[in-house]
Image (cartoon, rainbow, N blue to C red; front, side):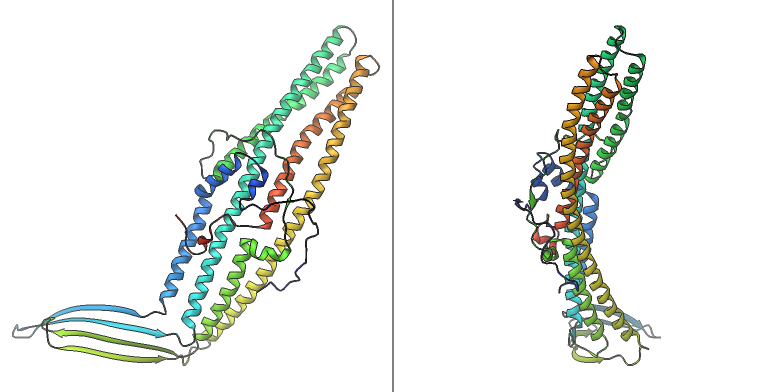
Length: 434
């Protein structure tokens, strides 16, 4: 069953160069540490463990529903003693067994079992979606940590460069070739750079704590070992067509199964309004001792039908039908949201690639401008303000380029998640492995 919306034939962006699809999407980013971190987190994260526990509950409920339309056998062992007014004691013992079976005339029980089976499968897809979300959050946090390290390193280099400029200005001031204003301006520029370090250090610590939390570890541990540079963004993955999202995204698979399960619940509610048939048999012995010759057995059949329930069962059918309509709307909404996420990620990536290209061009021009203004200043052809302006522009662009390169990686992670995929074994649909 497809959602009741128009199914687009293709995405607005068709990749020219395509990267292969990975079961582990993060392998496309080619980081030597990330795979190990995510693999460990998938085994240690407590949110994912909660999802697995919900799956175990759903599997247990499914087995319970499956047992409902099978015969049940019970045994009974009894004993009693009675004294009359003359203190004579009469002992009676009994041993018996009974079989009871509700015949599934109208598929009431099998529909309930099928609904539970689908709900269990939907819960398994929820586990897969939780794993996909966890992997994307961990990867994004990981690259933000690398970004902060790169910012810290580049900012430290900029501080050293600005400190050298300050020494140069002081030297020129001692020779009468610079003014006190030049020294103050450069000191202010140096202080401005130093003021950025605490926020980078603080954010880095916060990101480390989040990374450890996602990994199922206590915050405040030592810094993680990671790559030194941000990876180049790979080619776009094979996108397929929008309809592929219905099978690739675990959240959409879960919504689909919940929709079908809701339809089976309607069948169960309808069958509950119809007569039911139960058959059974009993057999056993009873007497002063269990070896007594008095044996008994019986068979029975009973028909149960609602006569007056004041509309309770009819109302339940209407409620279940309304739930189907609700699930259908949720399914359609989830599909449209998935489409939006993919299209937005593709659009943002296109824009960010253009932005990075322009920043790199600006950075080249800023370096040339700094070189020229510095030469003019050293030759006494201008004051220091143009040099400081060019230096600030170059340093600002260096930091901005790092942040934008990390931003496009974060956006690619969102695209991988929006496209879906499965990080878990297919066996997870019924039972948790391990």
